[in-house]
Image 1 (cartoon, rainbow, N blue to C red):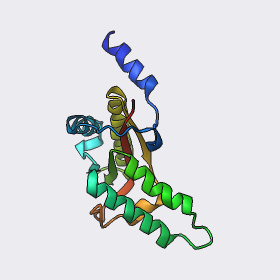
Image 2 (image 1 turned 180 degrees about the vertical axis):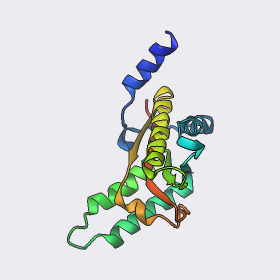
Image 3 (image 1 turned 90 degrees about the horizontal axis):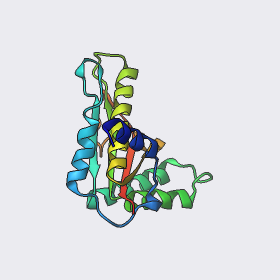
Image 4 (image 1 turned 30 degrees about the vertical axis):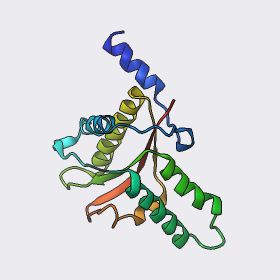
Length: 170
């Protein structure tokens, strides 16, 4: 196959694959690095490189799951709190091999929408690289991420756009 055919096949195969479908196999650090590198190749106006990614694995990932469950419980009125949703938050994070926070850094040099678009293109590159490497993934943007400023060390000119879950699929 030529490059155009390979690219077309990867684009056609790209799907959101959720943690319930991830295997127990680990994603190698080499592949995680490749996924993040492909994100940095996304186009961005005035070379602002507005993406900020933080990878959570192992103990850090378990801590993130616990923190998000705590935030959900603290911010949800008693009458709308759902035990299933609370449990799902922990399950999804813990079932994923790696979770990446997706943060946009607003430079002030270009309109904010352009920097959000650049980060979105970076995430699309991550999706395509995951697909090429048989890694399941999906981008989730729960409201809870707005409460993660401290643990993600989000600065005043930044905003978390969600979490990118990744896991091996067989």
